[in-house]
Structures are given as structure tokens and as C-alpha cells.
Length: 301
Image 1 (cartoon, one colour):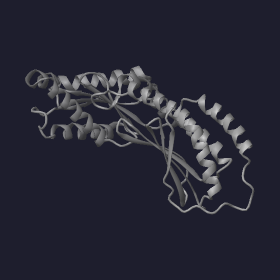
Image 2: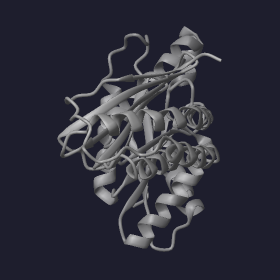
Image 3: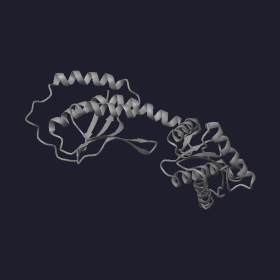
Image 4: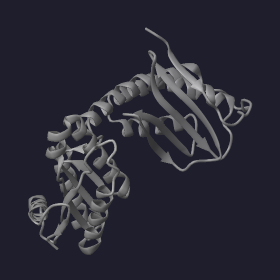
């Protein structure tokens, strides 16, 4: 078995060991075994990190713990607590596989005894962490459209139900946009499917970068997208839809020879709506926009 590598990137000089007694190796070994067994049972990444933070806190008190890792070229961060002034960071690698970077912070410097103990504990988490990351990435891939990088239809239904429930519980607003790339068939027929793929990627990027972080974008079907506007309703949702339509219509024709256009149907959540009612109204609005000549926005509100 190849060795575990834990590379320290400590950002502040450690304090010398304190006058108090070290934790006895036998005690740490016994408690470490119990921690290893407990961590191995957990495949959910965020609860695993939270559990490690609690357990490590018994030996190395800290104000925050963060874990940064890469998923599909995008860095994701799990943060527990509020960052302190002094930090120690570790790059974790097991069997030549980089797992990510784990950092602890607090208002006072870490001493050498604490850092030695922390490194022992990091040796315990690496294999449970590797398994949790494999599980997380498998879930991420199953929920992601490979061409556009957007969430796919398999998770849209759950997201729609969840956001409707949340909006109704808290009395907040929600709008659903159903979006159709009008001329995908024309692009495919005239310039080939690779050009059509580029058009889909171009539209997906425009949708993703033009919306707030709280909004959610999905590739619903071949040439259709769905957008959940959290806190959006009525004229505000129509304004967002019109902005999206205009931005795509003004995209450069490169690298796609034909500039894509969008038809968008808009519907806001009503008091007695369920997922089917909201979806059907937005879908009906989309087809109304297409019947009206395409490259336009139609709202049921």
C-alpha cells in the first residue's frame, strides 16, 4: 500500500509545547480507533467533515475548520465555524490521489503538541474521506448534464418540490422559467451536431452567469432548460426572462455559425400550487411564446 501524504502548509509559527502533560499515546490510540470506526460508517461528505471537526476539537480546540476539494474542475468548500487569525493547513493525499486541503483556524497560535496530535488524527480521516469523496463525485456526476455542466432533469423534480415547499412555508416568492433554444434543429441540420452542442454550451453558460447564486438552472431536455428564480415573481421574473433572452440573442455567432435564440415561458408560484400545477403553467407559457413567433417571453401571470 502506498503511503498517506499529509503536507503541512502552516500559516503561522507554532508555539512551543506547553508545560502541561501530553495526551498519553495509549489513550489517543484507543480513542483514534473509535473515531476511525465511526468515520468509516459515514459516506456523506459534509457530515463527515463536521464529525471530524467535533472530534478533533476535543484535542485541538479551533474556531473554524474548512475543507476544499475539486469537483469537475470547480473548487468546492465546506466551512464550519468562523475563521480566526491563526491557521494551519494540510494537503491530504492517499495512494497518489489528492483529496483536498483541510485547514483549522483560531485566535491564538497552535502549539507543537497540538499540531502533532492533529497530524495523527488526519491520518485517521484520509480513507473515510477518500470513500466519501468517491461517493460525492458519483452523486455529482449522476446529477449533472455532461455537455453543459448544469444540473440535469433527474434532480429538477426534487428541486422544484423542495423550493415550492420552502416558499409556501416561509411565504416567499418563486418563479419557474421554461426555456427553449429555438433553432437547435436548424443549427444541427446546417452545421452538424458539434455546432449544436456548442450552442447548447453557449446558452447554458449565459444562463448560469446571468443569474444570482441563489437561482437554479437545469438542462431539462434536449433543447430545453428550466430556471428556478428564488424570490422571483410577476413582472420581476418577466424582466429576468427578457434579460436572458436578449443576452443570448446578442451572443457572438462564434464559435456557433448561427446565433441561438430563446423562447421563454414564465409562471409564478400561487398559494395552492403543487409541482405539477406550476410546471404545467410555465410549460404552457413556453408553447405560447413559440406560437407567438419564438425569440420572445410569455407569462401566465
